Structure formats: structure tokens, C-alpha cells
Length: 462
Image (cartoon, rainbow, N blue to C red; front, side):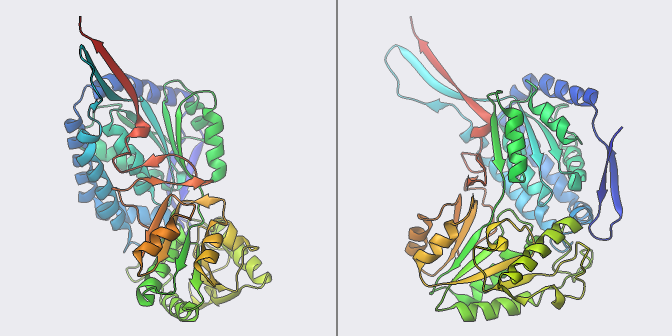
């Protein structure tokens, strides 16, 4: 049997090894998911929500162990990993459960004498979730919980770098009393995932990952007429206006750029600053960046850990080197951080100025601890630069003027516009993107729609 090995970015040690699922094992998973549908659909929405709540309680009760386990898998400092469970995961799960009855209820329509007419949302069937490693619980919960609440069965395939997260979720749902077959996971190869997508028992696919990976998912689903939800690349911009609160904006932009070693779907990857405040902003940004402590993420003093692997760090190092060759200047680079080592995942945060859009670091997704800062002369110039990207997940505007933020936001090609905030997913709002960031939605009162189809009831009274 083919195996997958999980190597920790902390020290290169083996965290876990698992056998990849065989064709016969995947067939059993699909069979169980299909068989579990009828019973789960017959379970009331209130009962489904109660199971979700018990699942969340399991995660909360085991948050310390889960957090340490997560740090070993992908390298985020242990001082931060509990927040993925104790804040975002439970917030999103509980919000979606709290609105499920109302959001999934019967839809009233205008009536005609002698008739009864209404719409109902029915589950699509079985949802396959292909989840990433960077926020393995937060990204997965966006689809798993609404899909289950809507009455679907769910199969999860987690990234091999965080495959233990799939096993933790399985344990949580078992502890919550979820019926057998309603939630399952597989450790599977890309070829096996593609084969699953082609199976008639898979009715919707959710994928978070690269643009190339998204294309492969859509190719596998071609001709099936099933829904595919994708969240792919990003190069999220920030614009600091002339009237911004600089102390606040500097702190938030630094955190938005370098939290999780820059490995965040909606983290800040490029910053545009109005010339009136550019120098002061850059000086403060540099000082705050130098305060980071790069090191072993199991150390409570560490504020930035290694990237997920050496290959990812090498990609960012090359972007930085190429930018410098084209005229960029590093005001902070990895030499400032003693733990930074070429040929390892340990890469200290880098701040580049004198950058432009001829450089890969300002065009292509970095997904690492580097950010370029550009001076702009006006809102119009900032908007033009922000839109000069194939991606569109989030964009942040830093200003004291809400009307200006909305006005600027209306012209930015992005799924979410922030004012004086960044790198945050609010479950009340729909999570979506435009352009090569992908298509589909998650969360909010609209977040059940991908996992349901509408059925019309047209009843004539005789």
C-alpha cells in the first residue's frame, strides 16, 4: 500500500504516516455515505444543530492537545494555534447552527385561490471537501458544518500536511453522536480524489488551494453537472489613506502581513500608502516587524514560526531575490532574525520598498512572510494598483472616513472589502472571491445554498 508521511516543519521529524486509501476502501466510504443519507435527511434540523454543538464542545475540551498537534503539523506558534479552535472554529460553527432552522425553512411565495405553492430546500446528497493545511480547521468548517446542517453527508480529504486534523474532526463527530456514515474522512492520492469526483455518489465538491489545483478539480467534475466551490489564490491588497490612524493601521497591517508566517488566504500581500503618510507608515511598519521573534513554534515566546516546508520558503526567498535584482530594497530581511536559515523553512519577515508590478512579489501569490510597500499619489492610483491582479479575495482600506471606504470599495475587484480591518472571516458575511480566486460562497445566511437545491410544490385543490 502507498503511504503518505507527515514531516514537521519544526525539526524535520516524522509526525505521522498513513496508508492511502485503496479503491476498495474508497468504495466502502462512498457506499456508507450514500446509505446514511436517508436517515440523516429525516433527522430534524434542530437535532443536527445539537450534534454540531456537541462536536464543538469536544473540540473546545481538547483544544490544548489539538493546538499542539496542529503546531507540530504546520508550524504555527503554539501561542496562537488554540485560537483556531477557541475562536474561529466555534464562532463559525455556532453561528451557522443558530440560523439553520430559519435559513433552511420553507420559502413562502404568492398564493393563488385554489392552490398551495411553496419552495423547499433539499440537500444535494454527499459533499466532498478537499481542505488545505494553512488553516485546516477554519477552512474545513466553512463547508462541513453548513453541509451537514442542510442534511448532506460529508467526506473530507485533508491536505497530507495536516491529515491528523481530519482524524480529529472524525473523533469529534463520533463523540457528538453523529450517525455512522454521515461524516467520514479519507487519506487519498490526487488520482483517487479525481476518481471520487467522477463518481455519481458525489454531488458537490469544495476545494481550497491553488489555482492549478482548482482547475484539476473542475476538470474532474466536467460533465457531471454538479456544483464545485473553489477558493484559490490571492494577492490581497491594503490601501492606507492620507487620513488613516497610523498607529492603529501600522500594527494591523504588520499583523495582517505576517501572522501565520504570511500563510493566510486573506492575509495582506501588498500595501499601497498615500504619499502624505508614506514615510511615517514605513518607519513604524519596519520597527514593528523587527519586534517579531522567529523560532521554534513550541516556545511560548515565539511570535512567528517556520513556513510549512523548505520548498515554500525557497519560493519566497526567490521572489525576494528577484525583486532586489529589479531594484527593490529590503528595509527588514531575514538577516535580522537569528533563527532564519537558508535551506530550511525558517524565514524571517521581509519588508520591501521601491517595488513595482514588474516584480513577482507584487503580482504572484507569495503565501509567506514578505510584503511590498508602494507609495501612491491618490485614491485613483491606489485603486488601479489594487485591481492590477488576477485575484480578488479581500482588500482593506484604512481611513477615518466610512463613506470614502465604501466609495473606494465599490471600485475594487474583490469578494470582501474591509475598513480598518483585515485577515478576518466574519460568519455573518458571505465569504467569496472573484477572478482567479475562484467561485462559490461560504458562511452567512446564504451559506447553505451551495449544499441545497430548490424543489417547487405546486398543489391544486380539487
